[in-house]
Length: 293
Ligand SMILES: NC(=O)c1ccc[n+]([C@@H]2O[C@H](COP(=O)([O-])OP(=O)(O)OC[C@H]3O[C@@H](n4cnc5c(N)ncnc54)[C@H](OP(=O)(O)O)[C@@H]3O)[C@@H](O)[C@H]2O)c1
Image (cartoon, rainbow, N blue to C red; front, side, top):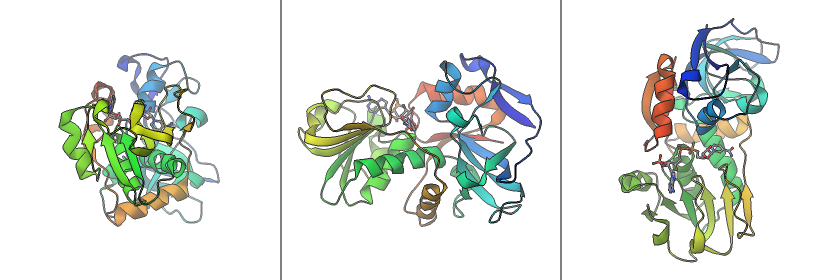
């Protein structure tokens, strides 16, 4: 079977699609035939930066596929499933034709969107929902999401609105303003200096942007980025995404209820994985880059 692996860190040229032995699932694992995955910043950072599991390393966190074999109750051949695999710490990459997935991270895929689109949900969705559990927006509050049309940001805007808070968004360029509004953001700007001073009870930062005077005194600030936390914000915290099949199942329910929309900007076959990295790293995407198998 095919897998996208790297044998060293570097540019897109280190990405290799090669034949590897098929995995043999353990008793607590389900063998999934991959239909699609998506590209997340962690994938290119793991490729480029000196970090991650031992070589040769299979990349990929998101998984949407069909059960090929299962001895685990609750999963049967033919089931459509999704998962987020914490590849960086576990070494289990999803960019392969077959993946032996621990059943504890697997859940049923959304029924009302194509399985390829569901590949855009797991990592970005879990990050958004878990980070918002730390932001804790409540009705009447005003919340800012930076990077409001990014993979995480666009889902965070939609999820934060469900809390009853008023949600605003900071985007990187004027061309992204309409998409942030469509996701449900109220005030949208591409200039941090245009944000109203002292307006925000909380900020979810997905873009590495200091909110400056826009954050109300004592306001909460939660970042998911690799940047060090600002030392001048006493209520600053970082969130690191965790594998969570139950949390993913909740997101699937919202997608099927049409209360959460995933957006795909490009579909590329796995053979074009180098192009997929290039496209994603260039920025400016509206919607995620999905790899199809
Ligand atoms: N801690 C965790 O567990 C975790 C989980 C997921 C992601 N992350 C990190 O969170 C970040 C976002 O992830 P993602 O998947 O959402 O990435 P993404 O899809 O690339 O989205 C980032 C968004 O931020 C925008 N942006 C960049 N600079 C900006 C600025 N100065 N002002 C406003 N918007 C700006 C980007 O616009 P352009 O494309 O136009 O530049 C893009 O729309 C990445 O650094 C990623 O590594 C962390």
